[in-house]
Length: 352
Image (cartoon, rainbow, N blue to C red; front, side, top):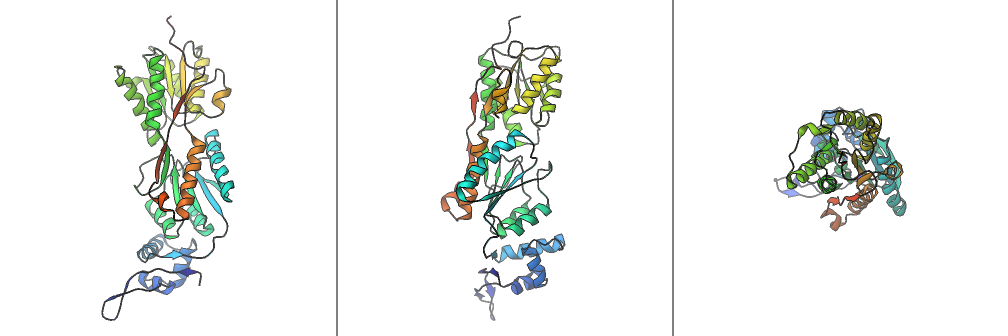
């Protein structure tokens, strides 16, 4: 039998605890289901009702049940909420480097824009039994976390988009510091009316960058003007649309901090359409430092987010958890530093 081993205390004839390895039959009796149903849950078969699956999972956790046996292949599941930008490629690059060093193959998937992948994805992971799972800008429901933990599949979240339980391993960047640094750079150049094209407010990184912007204004004695803040998705089209909205205002900003580099390039396009020159008429700062930031004209000043390094750190964390490394278990919340990269898209404001 390929399953094994819990050490759940059970009651003896007089009610005293005894210890022993639980079997599929033990789990089935405790859950009030058949042994075949337990087997289906363990093998991620889809023909089990959700309530029954959760009941079996609860008993598995109660018994400290872990499935034993060789994994099907040395795999690492890398899950994106969307997989269509240079941002994703940087994360893949970082993960792939470590995966090659560790003899792992990457399995890429996306949750089609949803922040939480569905049960069909999870069933596939449980069937593959990979070494671990990395989720990018995503989160898992509590039940999904429990199912992965029950199967002994470690996981981590890169740049989480929402609040997570304290015991969920994460790797992120210093987003607040990045927003602060970007805004201070523009203030030091002499800008006083600084706009923001922010990312979606539902995402932690967006809120942190905007909070850093506000902190920079306050410490410089500048008033926060909500009319200078617009928010949307982290896409070029959104940067273009929101950039036009800001730059068409009667008292337009002389500089814009964008939520990411793609939005910043959208602001570039909006400025060109409105006859504004960068940086002579408008300074722009991005966030991420994707390769395209160096190629556009003028090259984009931006906050470097160490995406490849974040992915590498998350993968090392998952591998450490898979190996039972106690030092890894003690440090499962990591933030890597952001830094300002000054190029040609920022300059002192025009005196005209």
